[in-house]
Amino acid sequence: MTWSVEISLVGAGGEPVDLKRTLMSHGVGDLPPSFIDEERPALVTTLELAPGRARTVTVDAGTRGTARVTTTGRRPPAADAASIEACISHILRLDQDLSAFYELAATDPQLSWVLTGAGRMTRSATVFEDVVKTICTTNCAWSATVRMVSALVAHLGTAAPDAPAEGPKGRAFPTPEEMGSEGESFYRDVVRAGYRGPYLMSLAESVSTGAIDLEALGRATPEELPDDELEIILLGLPGVGPYAAAHIMMMLGRYSRLILDSWTRPTFLARSGMKRAKDSTIIRRFKSYGLYSGLAFWLYLTESWVED
DNA sequence: CGTCCAGGTCTAC
DNA sequence: GGTAGACCTGGACGC
Image 1 (spheres, protein in one colour):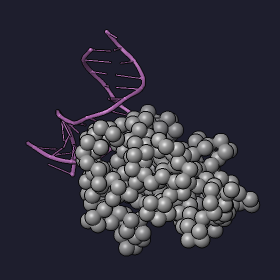
Image 2 (cartoon, protein in one colour):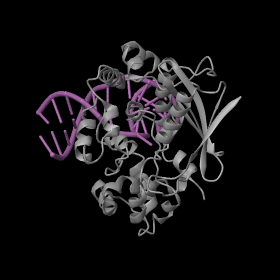
Image 3 (cartoon, helix red, strand yellow):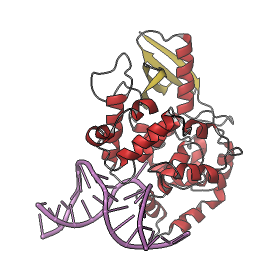
Image 4 (cartoon, helix red, strand yellow):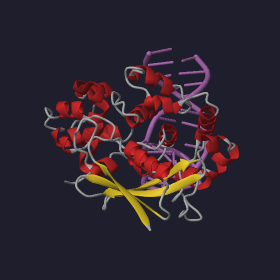
């Protein structure tokens, strides 16, 4: 028994949305509790709709330019169905208007390809989840990131009715309260987060007690909270430096910063054919994109992730 | 087996 | 304000 709903794949400015490009917009979209099937393409994720009540949903291509959201098992109550639809729209970032960015990209031969619907970066259900995941990408191989996030979800996440007994599948991302109630040994011995353990603990505690309101950062408009001020707040979070702040800002739809790290720097050189380039040189190349500089940079690097 | 380092950050100069 | 060194982990290397 399944229930499904179709969501129109149109951006807030009426621009097209390429579902495959969106699902494969960046690697963090494929960390538990989300799983990407590139071939189909499809996204499977588990959402906590209310405290203690989770549901696993699949998102794939629907009819006539829509995304189909499907969940198996008992038909969700109306409130849950609405919540599922809202969560997926949020994750796919359908509320964002990218038309201004597309106008800029249209004049750039190396980026004009994005106009068919690329550039929508998926985000997690909450800002907290994006921050935790980003901290787990710092100073380690991708395999370690997967291991740490998987452990958090597997051990703390609320299970959907169809969840396997073990592992990260079928479980929602843990809440700040769930993560905040764990101690040092959990982060050291179970998550094996190393020196990141205290960062994650401290972050979860601050968010669960209300000392920090990360979700408000996600809601704030650029007028209310300019990128410069947002960056300062993010840099104040434990374990968040320049790379992590830029990454989190991309997840928040703030594209003024370039993600400069050990993957993007060499990838830029390979793509541009340059032998070497200082960060300032790379920043200058994308300066004309203004508040969309970071998005332009990211798309320049990831064009080959999806074959047309 | 030791060294290096991966989608860096923090602290101490 | 800029820069060295330390830092958990674990997989990839060189010896």
